[in-house]
Structure formats: C-alpha cells, structure tokens
Length: 148
Image (cartoon, rainbow, N blue to C red; front, top):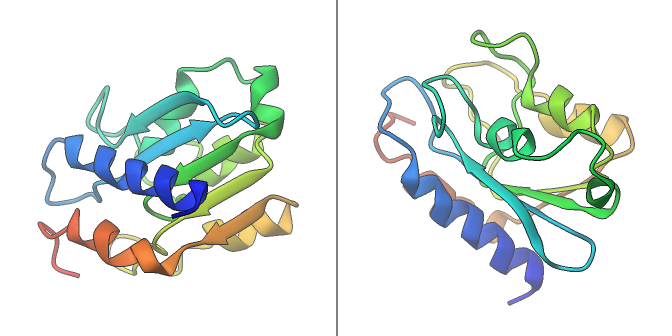
C-alpha cells in the first residue's frame, strides 16, 4: 500500500465520525505535509451542520501556513464546486491556499449538485489531482445512508 492509499484510507475512516445527515455526504479529509506528517484533519459537520471536511481541516491552519505549499490534501470525496450553505466552495478554499496536490477516492455523484467540477477546477488552476478508484467503494460505503 502506498502512502497515498494509507492517507486516503484514513480520510475515509475519519468520514465515519460525521454526524448523520439525510441531506449530505459523509466525508473525511487529512492534510499531510511534504515530510509525510499529518498537519490537520476534518470531517463533514465536525463543527457545525454545514461545514465540509476539507473546510474543517483547512480552518485549523492559517491560510499562509508554509507547510501547505508542499502538502497533499486527502479527501474521501471530490471537493465541492458548488454549495448552497456557504459562499466559498471547498475547491475555492483549496485554491485560496498553496496546496499543490489533492488525492480523492470518489467523484461527487449527481445527488445534491449536478455536475461537480471540483477536479476540473483544481487541475485547471495547476493543482495535481490524483484519483484512487480502488478506494471508491469504501468511500461509497461510508455514505450508505444516502440513496445513490
């Protein structure tokens, strides 16, 4: 198992901490420094009913934290490109930092928002995005409460 697999598996495990919601995905996120150390983690609805996993993890760090410049953000689900509950999407929050790399397990299905463009927006802005489909089933399983 590569480090990417291990960190992404941890993000999926963290998604199990999400308070139940019939109207939102269970998502976990972990931010790892270039040195391979965890610097932050978060999960959906961790601090309030509308917070997303990436948002929660990023909020625990200063936006100009120098460790972000070489970090990888691991998320069990593609970062959102549209949302109703906040003015900035998770994609925008990532782009507002210097995080150069994002690793995901699963693309956001058309359940709450049609046509998520998180991957496309990130790659279009120069962020490397790696998708690990081998972990998509585990990310989906963490969302068994939803009709997918």
